[in-house]
Amino acid sequence: MEIGFIYPIGAAITWGLVYAIDQKILSGVAPMVLLFVDSIIMVIIVSPFIFFGDSSIKDVIVSGKTNWLLIIISAVLATLANFLFFSGIKNLNASAASMIEIAYPFFVVLFSYIFFRSVPNIYFFIGGLLVFIGSVIIIKFA
Image (cartoon, rainbow, N blue to C red; front, side):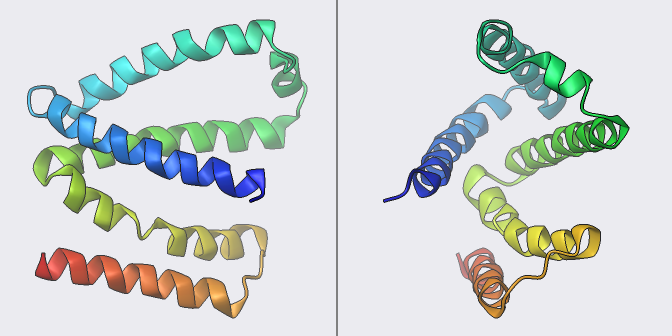
């Protein structure tokens, strides 16, 4: 199996564990507090890799205005997405929130087409539709 497939599978397994743990945490903590604490811990964990690794923060600094704008937009949207997801877990539960959130691949395809003119093939639409329908079935009947 190609490593490109192993990474997202590992991410899916890890996120499944994270969502279950977050449900427990969010029973006594506000979503914004968890988001803040997660961010602080992430900075602590990632900093040594940036400062002592092969990658350089200089690559981002010299990447140009377009990349900076996209990085800022991406960071703001990721923060909003995490807050909304934490709020969903707190108000529903991890399983229900994740089933609703799993519809995001449809929006990835849609926004990639709208903003970057990336033309998906029919299999993306069929797969996205099946995931979306599956989520609706689980939420409606579970």
